[in-house]
Image: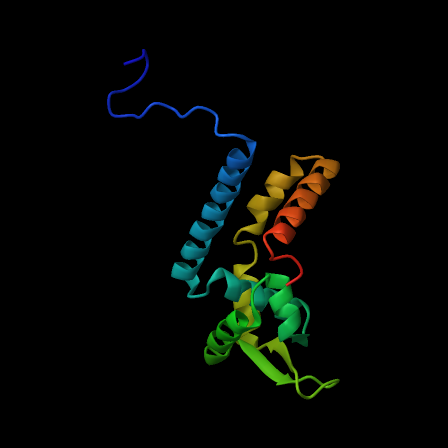
Length: 158
């Protein structure tokens, strides 16, 4: 056993390579977001995708299902379940889009507006604090890298 190693701790791995190290950081962020989403759901009964639908529909009344699905990078069929749960709880409204009656336009009920206002800042302040410490040009580089990864993984533009 090397000095400083405890018998019950495995030895550190050698460097895994930049691609794996980058993925480990993405997984750490994803895990943090998932944990925050679970805490939010336990406290409010609303999942993170539901919270984002509430927030977007509140900020942009009349938003379409397609716009919501693209904004959340989820398949429209996944969005259907999210929206149905919000409708059952009477948090979101669905009405025919005045420009195309085949499409639905979404907005918030008074209860939805109240819940949206109470949930603002669930994660965003911590992300904002982290971004505030980074120069804007570096944030733009990270955004470009993440967009490129999303495209290569087939999720960009949904």
